[in-house]
Length: 182
Image (tube, rainbow, N blue to C red; front, top):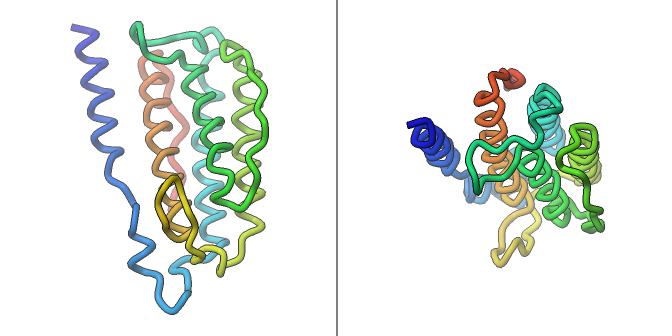
């Protein structure tokens, strides 16, 4: 019964997270102008960073090797995937993807340091973007889209991963960081 409940929660989170922002920005770009500014993108990134990092810090260190059922990632692996994805998306914010060293995903300290560094890495890239950069059409994993749309798609992934993070936290009786206001 417990296993079915876990799968139901995970399925519900996945279903809710699948609503994508892909192509929203594309339809709003007119005359080469971005519908939002670089400052707004940066502000949204900072809010998401705070939620993800602070939620991760709330998980007790002895639960970083926790997995709800066999075959699912441990909590440390789940969070490390988020850090890795941030680096994977480097080109989205005009950065080169760095080489990553493996970390001990059972170590809360190592996982959080890696996560914070990955968010800072993307933030530094966003800071370097102009509003004009946001409307630039780029090649993104086999598709062409505006840089803004790629950033929105990148944050879609991040939100899905944060939803999983919240599930693991709740299974251990830990309340996640409150979501930031708009």
